[in-house]
Length: 185
Image 1 (tube, helix red, strand yellow):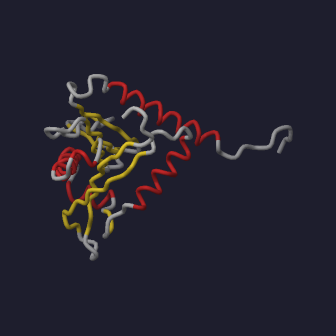
Image 2 (cartoon, rainbow, N blue to C red; image 1 turned 90 degrees about the vertical axis):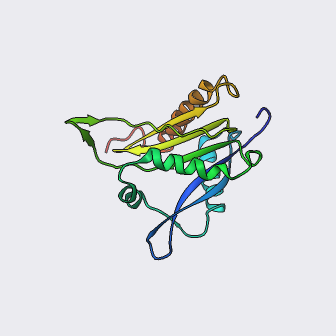
């Protein structure tokens, strides 16, 4: 989107019933991502404001409840989110972003510890790009799936995500209070 200052994303969100029981419902939110904002702190604040403005009725399912509900099946949840997007017109949004929390403790298979996990969000026919985000054991991991014919330079998006994350971390560390200089305490 050359010349655009925002990108519209479809963000599927799992909901639970008012009685706190998971209902298996998914709401699809349309969120404008302020990609044209140069300041990473302002960009994050604008995104937070945008997400609060489109929050669906009901409450979202907490990470621990979602993990208990599904075991550890983030790929299934990412697929469910992308399938929810299929019913909406592609003209309404530019990409699908799913976020599925994973367990915040180490997992093992045959005695070997899983050290990282990366989502592979499915790409539905007619869609150009899908982004999946998963957390695991204190880390956050993302995966990008794209139609290479539609987006032959998709590797640029991955590099831009990495740069934006680094920029956000740098700006957060620059804004931390510092001890006064020149005085010993």
